[in-house]
Length: 242
Image (cartoon, rainbow, N blue to C red; front, side, top):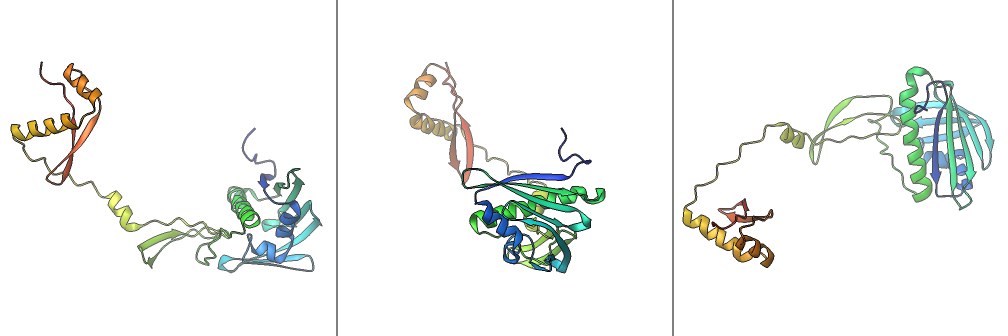
């Protein structure tokens, strides 16, 4: 079975840790919809007037409202969106969303868009948290790269939809990642006495088990770090000469 078959309605299933009366209230009231779905969603005469970021609007007819188990509206492009709510017998709600009649050219975007709406619904109902950014410059209908000054430097952001999808990127960090790594400075030559002194220090700091291995000519895998002239060098334990 393929994911979201193109010949069938879009379908999402989600569990909400709240009574279905609470979930139904979020779907069917002006304040509830404004808490997760749109900037405002006022219902007049069975028509919901949605207002999204960027002043995008849509008037959705309420097709059926049967508390607390079923809610259906005519949404974007004339599709029919239905929310079915079932009690999970533990105080929670099994929510099933279906969206039928979505135009083929909009299907991929609508599939992703409903994920944003459902996650925002879950956060609002379970935790009273609003996941949206409420930024008029970032909305689902536009994909534009803009750069604006921020305290952390120049940051581009992608504008993606009624549920803002923000993808911040620090240009200074990106430039550092994109630039070729500077070559490491060559290690300073060391005299034999310095190398021998470091080796003696390592042997003194080595555990008894490792010292016994060294005495038997066995080379342990562990490495130690020794600071010299402000730099750290990985020094491998070596077996003493036979």
